[in-house]
Image: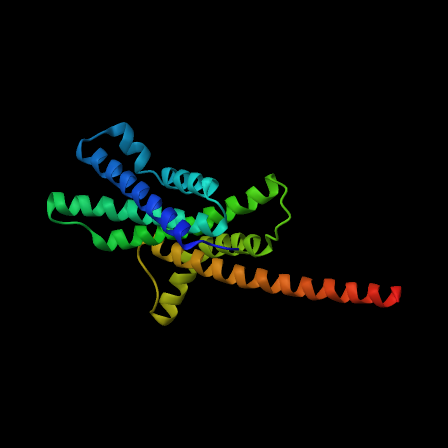
Length: 205
């Protein structure tokens, strides 16, 4: 998959601007007590909607991840920076957490949208790594909190009291493991196809 550097910079720049705008809207809605806007922008469904739309309109899988990650990251950064300049204080620990959540969500939604795009548009691109990633991201995300609690109580390491940290780490691990497993399956399927092809060629001779 060829990626042009200028195109990457263009996508990143647009994503940063969009993220900053959304962050401004989110924080100023709180400042001016705009209840209707607050109910939307403070919802995780709004985050899911933004990541889905960005992924749909991105050129390909890698751009979906890149664009969504930058939009969500700069949405959180601008939100907390405005709060800091306004009041002289901001919870930057929470900012780091929401940046991680945004990146994690971007991986998840970009992967789902990529698989759906290929199925709906009837492309013949191989999506086994992405399907494996979705499965493992979902499983690791669901069991992240109880598993991390178990590790904490047994080894006294690794447990974050805010569940979003644990879920995000679980989803990222699921993405990596699923991607590696999917690529491994592709290699095995490729070897199997080559063996069948070689046998057919030998019979024809």
